[in-house]
Length: 373
Ligand code: FAD
Ligand code: UDP
Image (spheres, protein in one colour):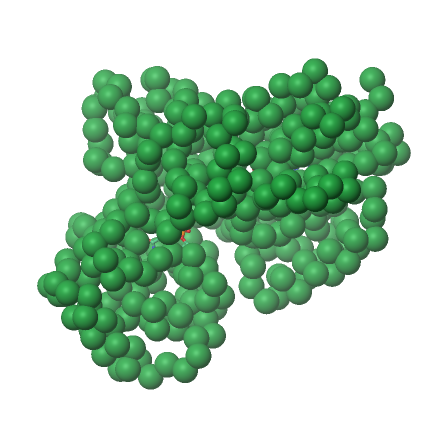
């Protein structure tokens, strides 16, 4: 078959693009180096439970069109993410809200909580926050920072909080209401039956062929010659042979266990926020879908240093890496037959809704249409 597009990576970016291109009558080949489709949103059934193989994935967005778009491919349940923090056996609600402040300080009203935070901020003598530690203390004070942020963050990123960019902690809400919803977005849920069905449906057209266990770099020159256009969702620096240097990522190791018990931790996500516990969180997958199976499946998530050849889960979007990325982006802009997309191709800490939006924007540009989302 003569294809119009080669898509490198069957994650959410590549699969959204493939689906939309096929809808427009284009013939598409999708390759992925993994043995399954879906990239990091892949879920697999174990003991009747949909297991998030690459960590907890909760879909959330404020964009009604993106919510409508993803709902074409699966029905979503009413799951609301409300993780628990376990700090040396003490349990706190996340994100940082009145339940957290009440447990920590015994305060009852929002005014009392604000006063406490203001007092701790004043004692820390901060100017405009220049790193994650200063940003965290200026948002919620020293106590929350020391118990719920510092240990978790330094494990997760393998760096001192004083060496990390402030934006990472701004992902989390700080609320003066008794509301344990981790996200502020209007729409949230988990696809009933797991995420893989979404990718399955996106790639279901007869115009799309999928080839797994296939690394782009095993035949890069041939692919570049044979395909008129390539959508590339792997690491951008690898595409250009690391010629300006290596972008940094953070990796993870997942340890999954089937337990012969009904309910292990009573919540889908429990974060271990001390410095000593080697993992950052334990996921108990059945709770994402309110499961009542006799057994349970849990996954411990261990942060790891990333080296070439490891799975690059998180881009390290600090100034140094962002500057290096901009150099690769310039090269990418001068490579018109290759479009770079997704968390790795765009080197952005994107969530799923942002990846779908970025892919639909790329589709609109490619087909000269008005953006739909
Ligand atoms: P990926 O899913 O990484 O897909 C890229 C694909 O390209 C992969 O399948 C890979 O195998 C393939 N590939 C790479 N290089 C090559 C090559 N050389 N040859 C062939 N194939 C290649 N988002 C949320 O919205 N909510 C959450 O709760 C959430 N939790 C997360 C938790 C964790 C632990 C992680 C790591 C991410 C989380 N995300 C979450 C983010 C979400 O996973 C991403 O936004 C989304 O999956 C990115 O899709 P993508 O297509 O850009 O990349
Ligand atoms: N974070 C923290 N304590 C927690 C949860 C998160 O300090 O209990 C910090 C940590 O630095 C993390 C960031 O907040 O990297 C963003 O958290 P999020 O849950 O969005 O991380 P992700 O799901 O992307 O791993």
